[in-house]
Image (cartoon, rainbow, N blue to C red; front, side, top):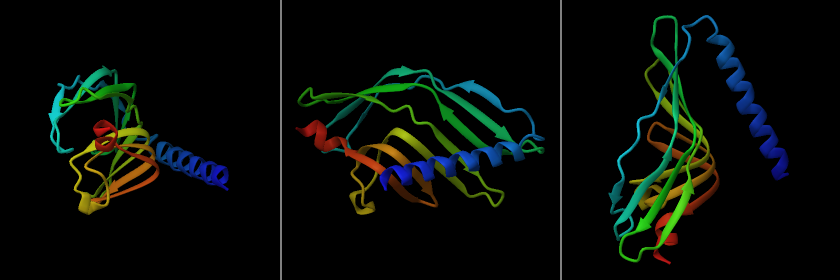
Length: 162
């Protein structure tokens, strides 16, 4: 049953991507640019300071536009690896957060961010039903202020507190 769901999900995503790419064939060629390196940051989302150290960032942002030049969607791909460290205890995790992800802008101006694979998120409120700092593995959709996720979710605060 689980394998059938995964196969159906993969086929659905592939079909949507093919239809989208075919419809953009008459639009301008996509542009590709390297994503600039990020500064290491310290967050306080866990009740203790956590450093996010960007170890490997070789990402590419591919932007697709329509015939008028308006952005239709952007794809984020490439390797991203971070170390997250509890600065009070020294407990550290090395994480692959390579995605990929797609940011899509609709004609009415609404935007949707969809990703698959591993991604890192912080700044959430527990009232939203998610940990404040977490890793997703699977598919997620962030749309109209709502975050939904299918797959594994790892509470990184709990992992780093251990």
